[in-house]
Amino acid sequence: MSVHPHPVYTPIEADATLWRYMSLEKFQRLLADRALFFCRADKFSDIYEGSIPRREAEHRISEARRAADFYQQHFDEAGALATIRDRAAFHQAFKYATIVNCWHINPNESDGMWRLYMDNNEGVAIQTTGARITRTMEDPAEDIEMSKVRYIDYERDIWYHPEDFPHRSYNMITPLIHKRAEFGHEQEFRLFHLIEVATRTTDYWQPDQHGRNIPVNLDTLIERVCLHPTATEADCNNVLNLLAAAGLDKPVVFSQLNSQPYY
Image (cartoon, rainbow, N blue to C red; front, side, top):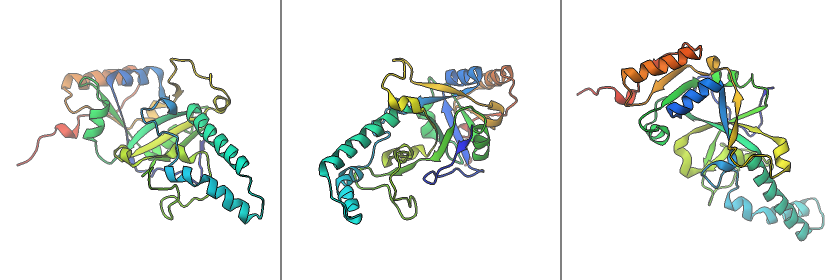
């Protein structure tokens, strides 16, 4: 297995700080399974996941005509429309067959991310670095893709940008590393794995199967664990005990959001 680089990916800096916010229940499951859960891309709440911007969709037929003119070929409109339909179906198949694990890029804690992922005032955030997560993902048996997510306006923008995304050639992976600008607060670094056999069927997953675990070395992955903003000493001791039971010796820190202000 290896981490797969690709020209369209935006790599993470080695010293970047990454967070994964989760409920205490999911943290316990992570320690018990010693694995990261990769969710099916088609199970995310954002229905635009894996789709393409409006302008990219509208220009497909004109791009096909321009290509025919460039190569001095007869333009077959019916054939071009069939190709467009095939590509659209394949984008949806990619979405069905891709599993994703998401991390938040931020040098600091995020109050908004706590509010999104904390469950009943219980939760933790795993803190890691770009270097740690890269080393971690070199171990699993599956091939893992990794990239920062780029946020664009799906009504007005196209993929290409001379500085941010200087790639003009068509690539099926491109929709998997883009999201709508409305989700920019997530500042996501995305790990994902394509299950190729699932692209050729519509019944790969069981009805209640929303993804699958990929085993990882938690000692390599976890730099420290941050407690939720309302955590108590008892919560801290509980997390320390959970880590010890899993054979992990990691710092557990209280949230900076609960620190005392100066006046």
